Length: 156
Image (cartoon, rainbow, N blue to C red; front, top):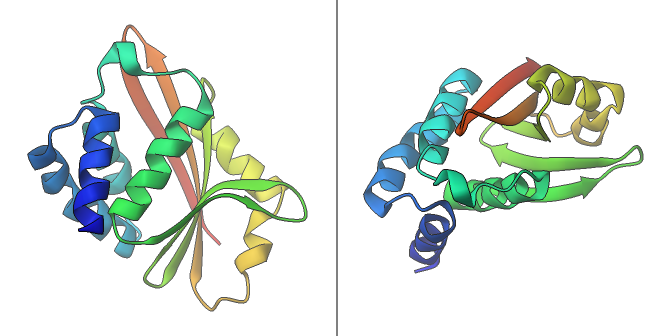
């Protein structure tokens, strides 16, 4: 029942139809379980392409909210705004043997987001988990009424 509620909630926020979401969920889940960030970002781009342009908000918190909801929908332990001694990690997703640290930016490069994770050493909080830590910078950009998602990652 909880999964169904989250599915329909994500559909309401993203304006994607439920069958499309149900088709993409296994792809997104598999990509994270296998540390295939390229496939994850491609599937995410496809999913977010369903959001009408007039509903996009050029604020990071909009994408943080969708991303938090998506992590929960995928069935992974997901936390937002995780405080460290040097700042806040936008999103942490625990998926199998991986700890993903996501930094989200708007209007800048994914490499800039990735550099922030490295510079602030957000990974230190998870260094004793015994899991592979993957740093992921994501950038959401709108141009010509088209949303593009750029990803950069590094295994730590």
